[in-house]
Length: 214
Image (tube, rainbow, N blue to C red; front, side):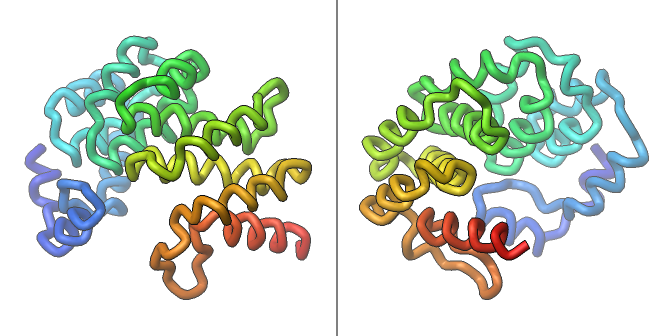
C-alpha cells in the first residue's frame, strides 16, 4: 500500500476523476508492479479488501480468475463502483471464470443499472464470439425499448452490444443501424480525430468497412 501511495500523481488523479475514478496511479506503473508480483491469489484478496481503488486494480492484475467462486464474484462486482475497477473486473476476471454465464444471466436482469451493465458487457462478448442460441433479435428488442432512457453506464453497455450485433451479424445489420439512428444515443459524443464514434450507425459502418478492406 505504501508503494501504491508513492505512485500517486495529482495530475493523473485529476484526469481519472473526470471519468469517475478516484485514484491517481499511472496504470503503466501499476502494471509494472503486477508484473513483478506475478500471480498471488491471497495477496489479491487482501488488496481487494482494502476498498482502495488502486489496490483493487492491482488485485485484479495478480489474481487467479478461476479461483473465485460464484458468490464471491457477485459480491465483488456489486462492490466495484468506480468505472475502471468495474471494467477490469468484468474483462480480466469474470470473463475467464467458469461462472461467467450464470452471472451474465443474473446481472443482466438486476435492477441496479451498474450491475446490469456488467451483464450486458458479458452478453456483448458472446455476440462477438457468435455464440449459437443467443437470441439476438430479442436483444435488439430490449435495446430498442430501453436504451434511450437507461442510465449512463447501462446505456453505454447496451449501445456496445447494439454495435457488436450490427458488426458481427450481417443479417441484423440494417436493423441495428436503424435502431441507432432512431434512438440517437451517443450521436453527439465528442470523438477525438482518428477515433471511431461510439454512435452505433457510424461505429458499425466503420468497422465493417475496415474488415472489408483487409
